Picture: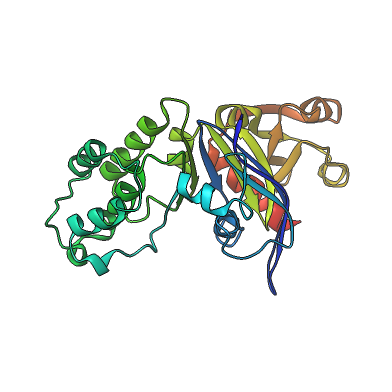
Length: 295
């Protein structure tokens, strides 16, 4: 099985929002970053995966299992973490661990102890008095200690400082190093995703803008700056693979897809002093989302 998650033709219609049609593929053994602006459909996609709402069309398979027909089997192999999860009912960290551990025969006590030390959590710590970041770490501990085949995280670094983020991503990298486990992260932390996720999918208005290996996607695009004496022609004939971001008289800035013929088009249509600059994932995200909003 090559894919941990396969979404094909997924559609979910709400009164004010439509998800899809959405096709998304998460490779097995990857850390996959699902990124997009607020309201783009990231959390809705995760909700659909876990059956929180019935899809209007399409299919979702997780670890080769149908997310509805095989719901019980897939949920035993998948874990979910969100800042909205609340474990205060159990009072103390140790009680929460003992309660959750009872449901999972594959629970790893030694790994749980390691995570407690790494995340600086104690059995007698009162959950009510934990910081927001510490409660997020507790949620991660309860998910990771199960040794799930797939871990789905919705904004897992919310409330974490830089050191805590490093600790969390270090543990996530260890969790997938055997190539058998998969992590799907929905996040607005683009710098974190670029550093730690080996695959990325970008979603906007409920649809996927692009998907692939993070390094290949970032390397595919360049920020381009050039001069032209005929801006009207540029705006009228803007070629495929070039997204104009802003212009000031004869000086223009844009996003250029190096797999297209856009640079050749510029050179043959009078553009001068063309300069290309490498992009970050955040640069690419801002440029693509800005284009989509303007469309």
